[in-house]
Length: 504
Image (cartoon, rainbow, N blue to C red):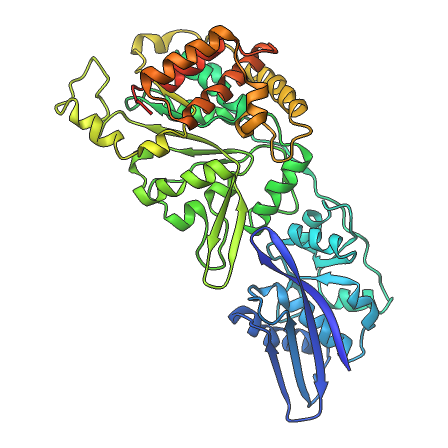
């Protein structure tokens, strides 16, 4: 007789159902796990044996075989402990087999039978709901998994509680979704003295999710501006919050089931490796670009990142997803992020500062910004010069709009775009528009079309650059609440694209 339990194996953000089969047969005493397990899964037999012993349950002196099906799918992680224990308990007829088969389980067992939290409870709950099964997980994961309202989530603190639940002695109470974590108090745009043009550009970037590059001397306020960007972004929608939280669940970044509506803000150091930025490593984990999904990826000292890392960004920026290729699998992660990069104009940083002298003008700047390839530069919709601020301006009182005021305008523009793209799959903001949809929503008036044609001819805009100017112009019109794209919208969009003197 074969007893069955069910769990999941992770392939990116997807959780694939795995059938855990347990057979107890006559033969020399043994306990083996087959089905392409990794080291952590193979060691489950010792944790399960000790956990059962702590409950005074002894394994029979027979041949115990646990098979993880499908056998050709790699099984990684300690979350296989609980389903292996359930299949074994069902095979021993300690708990009913029928009820176990209606449950997807995951959790790590300690030697005394306690259930330890594992990553991936939220994607596992999604998989359980699709298979019309309930989810059984450690108590620490229950609030996280319960956000998937389409399935019942049972959370237990110990293996003993699980046994008492299945035997009807003390049924578990369904877990409740955790509290929505409030977003961090954002820093206010009004704290930034001067830099009105940079503030305007970041407002446009936030409204339409347009990638932005800021170039300026050290201390001009590039990092300060970027740190205030989350304060003007609208909160995540319910769908976006679930998408983002599934990635963070796999990365182990969700604490006690708290799902936040605040957009992610990731700022990796320029020494980060390729795997850290785009994903990979052991288990093909999500990288910074995926952890920034639906949020902001801020890359300070942009030219200092390794050239291969920068070039790898080109494809995810266009497609909104990254494929981590491995010998036995291709793992996909979503990564629709707002890229904000900051760079000095040259190696010493003072090429454009009239108060200081750069000893290697203009070679210093050409060599330094030349680390950013033309194809990558072409993907920045907004290129902003951030000039140094005079120390006399620092004593002036705060000026300009507050972050709350800017956020209100951004939210209004985003609401317009949400309504606009309601019937278009895969499009949420103006940066996603392409093809016939872009031509329909961003067609400029006659004067705007003539201006754009002259600019394209004079500065050699690529086809990608041409379309990106249209998207930015559409966002500027949305911020003004104007239905059509006009000449002034095109002119402002073009001015940001050519701000740092590049021909791309």
